[in-house]
Length: 89
Image (cartoon, rainbow, N blue to C red; front, side):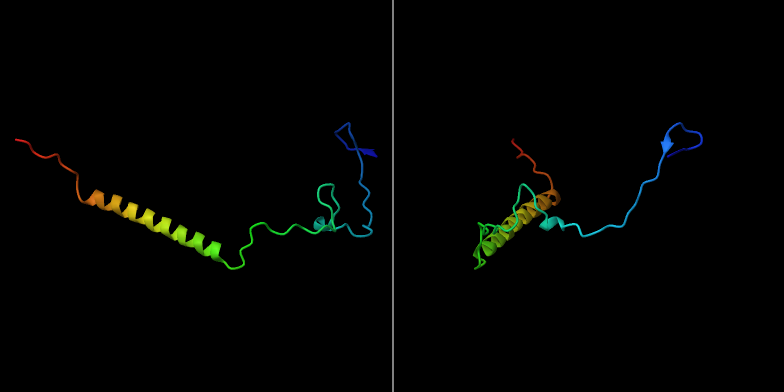
């Protein structure tokens, strides 16, 4: 090691060698949490007919239309003018 001029810390050089072999891919690496080789459990919510998706999509459209109608009603109420109390007398 040599000292760099102007500093009192010794400066060194890192030794870089050729890499030998291959590192395992992260998805194939053995961990303590997930063990390789075990079959993954089947999904819990499987709907091959697509009925649930259609139902959820229709419900989302219904909520969207309802919100649009409420927004339209609020928008129209702004243009129709203010409500006036009845004149008594």
